[in-house]
Amino acid sequence: MAWNLIPMIYNPMRRPASMIRNHILRHTPIGTCIDEVIKVIENNERWGIPSVNRSSGFIVQGVGVPNLRAFTVVGDQSIQTRPEIYNVILFHERRTRIFWGFDEDGKLIQVFVSSSFAPRLG
Image 1 (cartoon, rainbow, N blue to C red):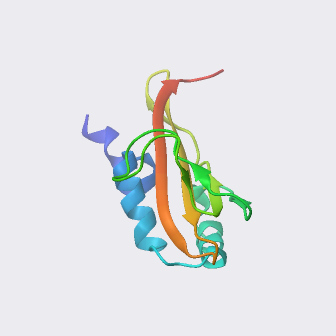
Image 2 (tube, rainbow, N blue to C red; image 1 turned 45 degrees about the horizontal axis):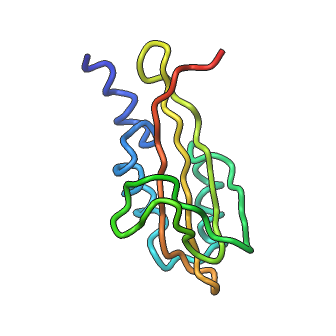
Image 3 (cartoon, rainbow, N blue to C red; image 1 turned 45 degrees about the vertical axis):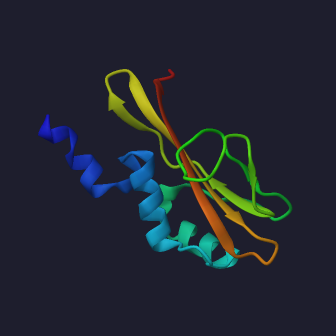
């Protein structure tokens, strides 16, 4: 069973959502400008390709961040990434999406990580 933990140690994107969020916040702390976050994402290929929306925040699609209710719009601008899909258990995989929310001045105000297990497709 210990062999299953080795990939989690070397790749933070395989960890639970709360740990991924903490990892992301260490690299992109609250207050970071949107252009700097884009650079950080592009330099961390495991985080996925950024989808930038400079005209709308993101919608919280679940729970996991204190003081955020599901289906709340966060920010005036946003970035979303979809890191690689990882096999976790036979025939199941972890799918993760990361959202950064920014105020009207382009400063980071929130990070949300959505992570789920699902049957492997194909």
